Length: 72
Image 1 (cartoon, helix red, strand yellow):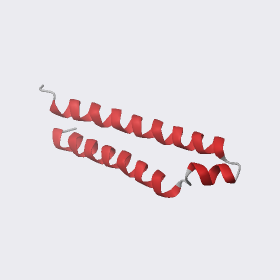
Image 2: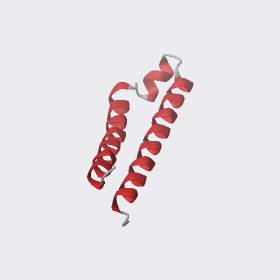
Image 3: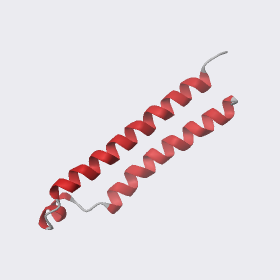
Image 4: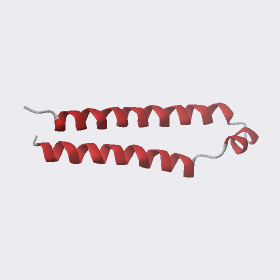
């Protein structure tokens, strides 16, 4: 792949990580509301999954930026 495509893919991956956090904040109930419904433990599981996905996307984005900027 050429450098432009690699850097574009890195930007898209980092944007998806940001979108994942925004969607999580807007779609997941607050902890207090989840506890009222008896769903406190699943709330933590959902946020753990969101954190792992964001960390993976950030790592992939950083790797792609590093690969795109590396000299041949």
